[in-house]
Length: 92
Image (cartoon, rainbow, N blue to C red; front, side, top):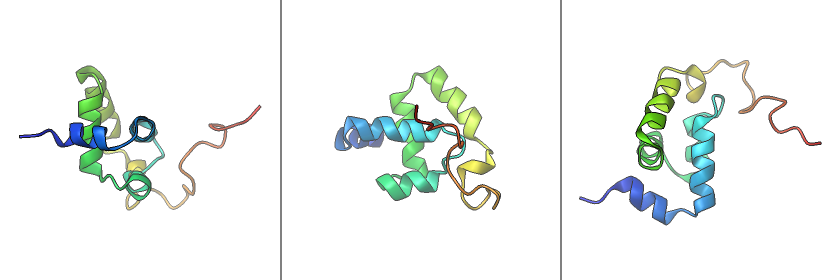
């Protein structure tokens, strides 16, 4: 049986896989935003993270996002109107 995360990794450009991983690590970026941009649903993101990360890094990430209200649009506060900290992308 083929690994779907491996197939997804080969299908997407390396830059997109890297950006998906970065977005998955971000606290304020919901899985729905990843799905909207890259057509990769939450379960596929989890599989991709499992495939791309070291086992210890994957466990840390899963512990971090499990139950985090900001990772799902339906559970996040209406006070959150953006997906990143205002100082995150400051330009010099």
